[in-house]
Every structure is written in C-alpha cells, then in structure tokens.
Image 1 (cartoon, rainbow, N blue to C red):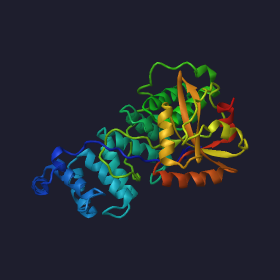
Image 2 (cartoon, rainbow, N blue to C red):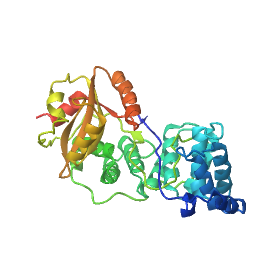
Image 3 (cartoon, helix red, strand yellow):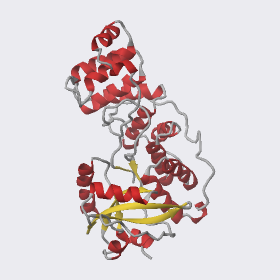
Image 4 (tube, rainbow, N blue to C red):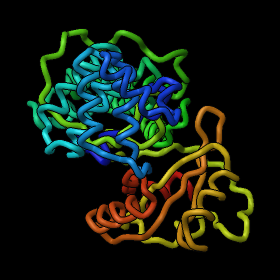
Length: 356
C-alpha cells in the first residue's frame, strides 16, 4: 500500500525580485498596476507574508492572480497554495491543482512535485500513479529529493510503473545523496532484501517514465506559502513497511551526557512493539545536537548502520505496544517538532540491524 505522511512540502527560494524586499510598496504598486507581472507577484508575496504586520490575504490573492494570469509560474504556484490553505479565498482543491498544473508545465519543480503527490493519492482527481511517477521524475531531475524518494517508492512497490528494485535503488540513492534521511533507511532495507543490489549503481536513471502529457488537474496541495526553489526535507510518500534492514552495523562511540545510544535501550524492548524513526544523518555529533535541542534527556536514542561505506545514525523515539498507538504518537510528535510524521518501525526489525 502506498502511504502518505506529509504529501506536500515548501519550496523556499529567490523567486521575488530584489525590489520586492524594499520598503517602496508604492513603486511596486505603480509597476503592478501598469501590468508588470513580476511586480504584481512581489506585491502579492509582500501581502502574504505570515510574519508581516501588513499581511492581507485578500490583497495577496488579488496580486498573485494578476501575475498568474499573465503566465508567471511562481505566481501560479503560490496562488495554488492560497487556494489549498483557504487564505484570501475559500478552500478550493480544483482551483489549486489547476494553478499547480500550469506552473508544473512551465517546469517549476515545486509545482511538479506537489502535483505528483496529489496524483499519487487521488485527492480531487482520479488516482493516477503513472502521472504521479511522471511528475515526480520531472521534479527529481531538478534535484527535489522528496520527488526522487517518492519515485523510488513507486518503482519499489510497482505502482504506476513496472516494479524494478534496481531503479528504485537509484532514485533512493539520489535522494539520500541530497540528505533526505528516509531514503537512506529505505535504501538499506531494500538492499538487505535484495543482496544482488549491494553494489552501488553508477548514476540515477533519466527519462524512465512515460512522457504522456498530463490532463488538467483539479487537485489541491496543502503546502506552506513559499516561493519555489530547492526543497528541504519533509517526506512525501512513505515507503511500504519492510521487514529487512542492513546486516552491517557500526560500533557507536560513547554518547555525550545529554544523549544516549539507543542500542542498549532497544535491546530491552519487546520485539513485537513499535518505535518511531525520526531522522537519520551521517554526522553523529549533528544527531546528538538534534536530540539535545528537541528531546529531554533519556527521551530518545539513536542507533547506527553502515551504507556504502558511510555510517548513518538514526534517531528513534518511544515504545508502543501497537502500530496504531505508534502512529498516533507519531502524529503528536510531528506537531511538537513542527515536521513530518516519523516512520513507524517494528522494534524487532531495528534490533536485528542495530543490536549485536
């Protein structure tokens, strides 16, 4: 089953011209009223800023629409977000997806990723995983790691494309190389289940998804309002539950006083219980710092595994008797951390990989 934990993501960047950040709103207004699409976009973004005392969502929609109707992709993308969030307009998934589609067809990676995510689950449009794969590939080739990861999931489980573990590995590698931690975990599990894939492929594939032109979408994308650009790392499509983990496990160094290694803690847990995987990183000190900044002492731990000669340190949190309890706790933790929902993992799987 294809699962969603947080389908959408923000794409912050530098889509607004330099004058948008100046104090001269009058000059922006003059240029926007004269038909300057980028001035209208910049003015709309000024009104849309959530941390600005002059925020006015109705005016933001007005000027974003003016720019979007002139074909400016960044404005189309952000206008779609306003429709998703119901800011300045009623929530309207059909309108949102139509604006995303127009931006995506102009090559905007953020819109391509969001549109692919919506096709993957069929919210507002018939579910179409083939189109989802097409849009994920276009965004992945523009270095959106979530898109590469989601495309890997589709190849991994054979949804919208023929199942192909080798191709899934390549897309997971592409996402992991950009620091997207769920891809590293899924990559390790897939390789453990497929020993012939242990050797690292040379490069990610290109052009492997059908280029069938998309139909007009009527779907919404609940993403925070941002200008498009490089993506951070909230996850998109969650991988199907795996029972495999990498066999090679690294020896952890002694944790600092304010953190702990999860390995002794995990060893004492019931194998049929569940825990929450929060993140993975190759820098152990960064993992410890993350834990000290986000958890009380003893509240979370971490374990390590080896992948392509690198040691990955994975933060886990909690001990839950059932998958449903872990899922509910994960939703609460995502709100607390203001991030994506953690990955629910069976304790036995992690123990098999991390405890020696």
